[in-house]
Every structure is written in structure tokens, then in C-alpha cells.
Length: 469
Image (cartoon, helix red, strand yellow):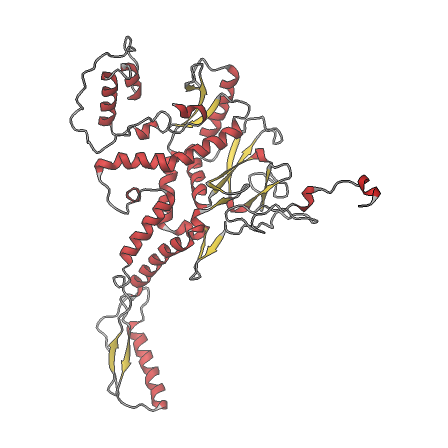
């Protein structure tokens, strides 16, 4: 070390940083780019595992194939419908720690109420061309098919993150790349201009809500549809093979054999004649799908020997198809009876829906509430976003009635609380607990196998302090 080296500036630590995972690619959806010494072109995206993958047989699995697979789309649609139909509310914590409606409750402060109304309007009317159902349906589709969603926020002043967005749009997840900057905040680059955003101007972290289904490292995440390449391609190939059999199964396949010795010159003549006659006999057109009542004249003692093709029964395609469909359902967390793969029993339908909402939908809902709450309710710690799942977890009307009656008779809830649970108005003088230790008999007709959505449903879909309920 020279004497004057102490006066030199320290080397920039960021200059040698590699903003990538596993060399150049991430095993998921985002490639973190950091090109040194040259300008980064917006269309030079490194979407590696996200866009496509190839199985060992050479079958390409990409977004196009996923959207054409009936099993995948059935699972994705089931989850999208379950999410899109849920009502959304903005809740606030009261003085007693319980959640109250921030839009309608008079005990909420004026500042919180104004913010709650603005965010409530945005979530229930996201833009001028989509309904709330369509927006959240599309959000869920991108979430499952691409493994991530990018929601662009449009503000009156794009550089002011404190303003509540006026509209929000869903960007194409295959045309946007996330980059972690030296400030450890992400920026988002578009490969094509869209919704008024310029592809040459990266979007700031407060302009995009980026939600990953299976977060991995940095801003990267796994895409289960693409990573399950072998399973999805097998399911697709079974459908293609079945269609091939049904389309060509009516055409005979065979060969002509003879014990006679045929000279080479004569063989070519016979082969050409047989080919022409066979094509005329079996060749079908769109206006002439079959040619019954025709025959062929075979010479030189030839015989026709049919060849039996591999049938669907030989391949055991039905059992294999059932297995692949169930495995795809397990991949997306959808019960097979919900998409018609197998017959379910009516006495456990509510139990199946309970498990579906709690194990599959609740993680997605929690991610939405946290992501959108962090972005839209920054600076308002008393407010939170809540998807109302209670109505879908209550069970059949008869089970709801039994639950309310049992709660009132056991002194757990007041008659007015039971009426509120059933969606009825409160009555005067019905706010006292009933002191009755005599157990009540259930209303006849209830199914003992049906849980009726039992359990604590008041904490479903809540985050933070709300989960303590």
C-alpha cells in the first residue's frame, strides 16, 4: 500500500454487485437485471422459467398451453370465482380492539373515514371498463397462471405516493420485469408501453403492487404451473391422443401380404395401384366422411391383414387421465369434486367448501390484504382491508339456525347477536344473555356429517390484530 493511497476514494461496493439469482436466471418469475457499462434496453427482458419450459419428451409448456389445458383452467376459474364474488370492506380498530366498518361507523375519525371511503371506492370500482368482479377474477387468473400479478396504480400526481390512486389496472405479467435497485426498492420495467406508462421510464415501487404466489428470493417467485411441466404436458398429451384416436379411429390400418414372389418392376406397379385404390377407398373429405359399399380387387394372391392400433383401453388412458387431473387439482389446491372430476356427497359439501376457503383461498386473501393494505393504507395503521368470507363459511340455512339457537341457549351470544349472524335486524330488549343450562335439541333435518361451517369464522380473512379474534 502506497503512502498516498489513503487519500484515494473508497471503491464503490455497488459497482461489483450482481443483481441476479443463480448466475443469470431465477427459478421463478422475475429476472433481476443489472447491466454494467451500458444502457439497459427495456425490451431486453430475461424471462426464463416464467415464459416456458420443456419436458423430457420435448413438449413445450408455456402460458399459451396452460390457458388451453382444461384441467388447469377449471382449477384457476374455481379459485377466481371464489375470490371475485367476495365483498370487500375497509375496517378500523375500535377503542375496544374490535374491528368496525370504517366507512359507516360514526366512531371512526374523520381522517380515517375519508381515507377508507377513497380506498373502498377504488377496490370496488377499480377502473372505467371493469367491474369489481371482472378485476379480481382477472387478478386471480394472473396470480395462478403466471405466479404473480402486477397492479399498476394511476394517481392524479404520479410522483406523489401519498395520494390515493384514482384507478388501478392489471399489467401483463409476461411483459414486465422487476429490478432491485441499490436503494433496495424495486423498479418495474415494461417491454411495451401500456395504460399510459412509457416503456422507457421504469415504474417506481409505489406505482405497482407486485404480489407473488410463491415468493422465493428478492422479488422473485416460483410459478407452479410452469414448474409442473411434466404433469401438465402429460395431461395435455392424453387429450391430444384421445382426439387423434377419435378422429382417425374409423379408418382401417393394415398391410397386404402374399406368398408369391413378385419381381421388382411388377412390385412397383402393384404398389402404386394398391396405393391409389386404398386412398380412393379410405380417403375422406369434409363432405364425404365415409364411403360405404366399396371394395378392392387384390391380385397375385394378396391378403389384407389388419393392424390393431394402441387403443385408449390399452393405454389405460381413463385411469391415467383421472390421476393427472387429481394431481393438478392438488397442485392448485382445488377439491376434485368442485370441477366435476369425481362425484362428491352432499352431506360433506360444506365441509369441502370450508377446507377450500381456509386452506386455499385464505392464503391468497391474506396476501392481497397485506399487499394492498401496505400500498393503499400507508400512514393509516388503524385501517385494514378485509374480504368478507363469513357468508360462504356459515353453511346451510338449517345449520346456521342450529348454530344460532345453540349459542343463545348456551348463553354464548345474545338473541340480537344471533339475529345479526342470520342477517336479521335487532329487536329491542334482546341484548341480554340467556341463563339456561338445559341443552337444546338440534332442529330436525340437520346432517351430523356436515360441519355447517363451524368454528371461529370471525377471524377468517383478517390480518394483524384481527387474527386474535
